[in-house]
Amino acid sequence: MAVYAGAGAFLGFLLIPVVGALPGFMAGIYLHERLRLGRHGEAMAALRTTMRSGGSSVLAELFACLLIAGAWLGAVVWADGRPTAAMVVPGARGTARPATTAPLTADG
Image 1: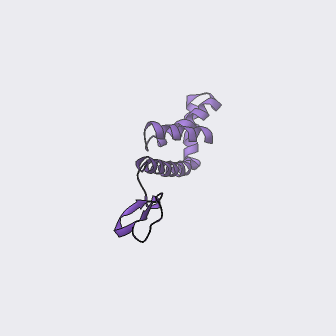
Image 2: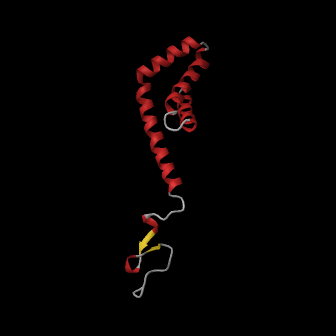
Image 3: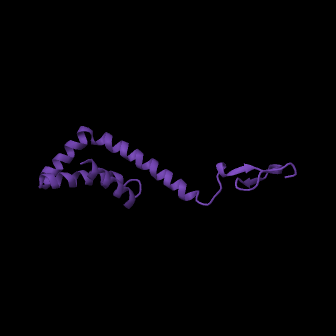
């Protein structure tokens, strides 16, 4: 069931950024229970029971992980090709030079 719930949350997060993880998580649980039990009513009852017994806490943790991963990915895409603090060393007279240049000398 965890695989279905996680896959549903991930797909929901991709299809509808950020908020799609919530219905995707529940859809994944529903799909697993529907395949296991075979009827809509029983699958809905199992989904309600799962969400009440601990699914909400699992959903909160998964949602936090997805937000962190999304923020990281956004930072990677946004910073692509731009120099960061780790890539730049202070140069002569207060300027900045890329870290890949030759070492600084006394004459700058």
